[in-house]
Length: 369
Image (cartoon, rainbow, N blue to C red; front, side, top):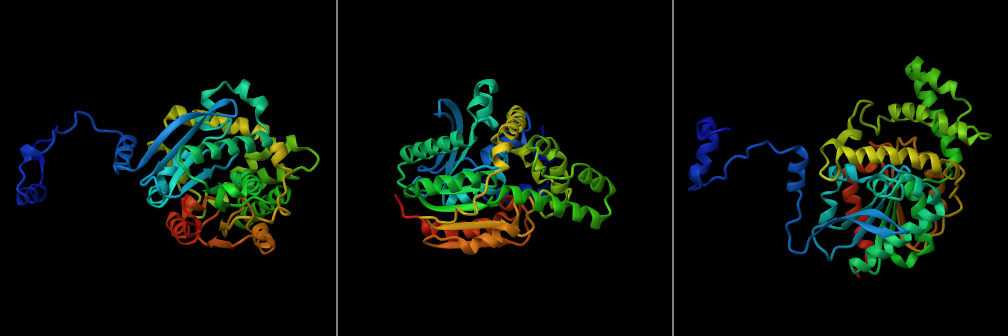
């Protein structure tokens, strides 16, 4: 344990200048706290009207995990629909979300069969219930719960990737529930999207002279296989490995450790991450067939304002498709924000720019209670 003798003079003098003595300082902890514990305490909501709640809520006949955080209860409520399917956002949320909580009360929901929700009910009981329609119905129940619990007539809905496919259906079905819809990495024509992603990844591998990548990608051609969705699913991990490599899990660099920020998360444990991995496998197995056939290009009429955030270099969800579709969108107001230094993980890659546009473009669309 360090003593006053161990402290450098520059640490002692300011304390003396403030009229403090070392004797008034709290005793050093017996054990060094974990990074997770430090982060948990550092971001703890201390304001009297702050919200910091994480719990299992009965949704769709099973317990599902919902986390809600914000500095002021009167702020607009924002629900984040994670991607994947099964790729829960909560493990990395602390990395980019803290400043959002100054302007919004932010809710995360681990969807049916995903993350902490996966761990709450045996997978064999949940798997037969996992359909796209059931996921939309779950989302409806989650929104109803949030609106009632936090006294909000309308909320902001934010979807990422797979979450945008749910989000569009939800906001078009119940526009009266929402102040605005934000699509991050907006999914549209999934069959065409997969073709474009594969072609762009193979072209990048050839330009790079990456023999291993070229061999892997050519071995799974045609991808996607229009005649055999099961074969496409079986090869999906191989294709996504190289797609992610050339996106660099974003646009920073192939070895950027953005996918590893969960290791310091105050919201999840190693056990939670094991559940997330298992839930991701289950979700892809169940949903890949119906997702691979989804096409929202004709779903271009919205009764609420819409804002889209998209990485210019996104190959996971084609930037090319969004650019072609956006002019057809009809809404009370619409905006497309390009993130020039991002690929698919816009909110992790350019968190400052996301915050600026949430505050400048989305917050003014909220209408209080």
